Structure formats: C-alpha cells, structure tokens
Image (cartoon, rainbow, N blue to C red; front, top):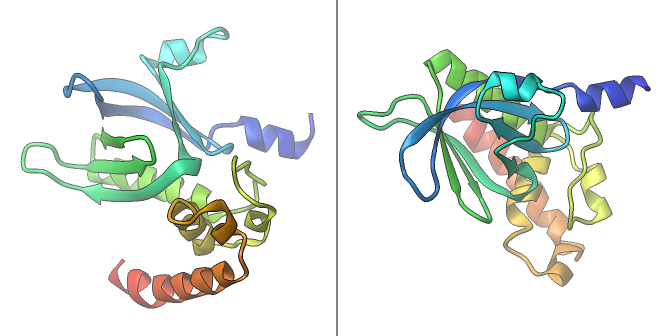
Length: 173
C-alpha cells in the first residue's frame, strides 16, 4: 500500500454527532467518519464502525454539497447544516469547539486537492481548481447544464467567485 493509498483510507475526522432524521425529525446520536473520498459516513455507534464488517447506516455525498454552514437555534446550539442536491442534513455537535472542528475538516477537504479526490459527474477541470475554487466549483456546477459547465466562460465565473470569497467571506470570519 502506497503512502497516498494510506492517506485515502485513513479518516480525516471521526466522532459522535447528533443527526436529525429525514423522515422522523428527532435527533439521534451517530458516529460520523469523514473520508478523503468526499464522503461523510455515519454509523449507529463507534463499535459498528470499528467492526470489520460494520456497514454505515448512511452516507453524505460531499460532491453534491451546495452549502455548509454553522447554525444555532434556541434549543439546539452548535448545529452544522449541510445542504446537498438531495436534502438538508442537520448535525448537532457537542460543543462550539466540536462544531468548529467539523466545519474546518469538511471545508478543508472541499478546498484541498492533495488527496486527489474523486468527484463523479465532473469534468477534468476540477483537478486544476485550487482552495476556495473547489468549494465554489461543487456549488456552482449544479446551477449549469453540462454544456454550460465545460464552457470557457465558466472559468470567469470561478475567478469572480474566488475574488468574492477572499474579499468578502474571509473578512467576515
């Protein structure tokens, strides 16, 4: 096994987080595993994750993410909302520090290309996208048709979004 293979198989972050159900809207404790292949798997508990044949209860495909944000409600602090093409995932962390760690881990994965991550239904252009452009790339590709996405004008959209990210968003952090 090469060093890159080992990096791809080791989880980037693991830990317990409450997840809001899609059908039954209650929060349940789950053991989450953030992988370098742009997946956020969750298990019923840590024991099932550590079991060799343990299968996840579900998985969030981070390649379809439209937004990731920290959120607070009166009775539910330390929330992380992940909006994908399929649904909105609401996760409740145990502390503000835990919330920041999960946010940092997820956004760092989406903004970093060192793992050579796989993005399905995406053009080869993603291999050249760096840092904040990767996040913008994942978000904006859902707003364009396949023909528009590979158009050269799309590069200008990414450039403008990156400029906005560094001038507007970074200043608010």
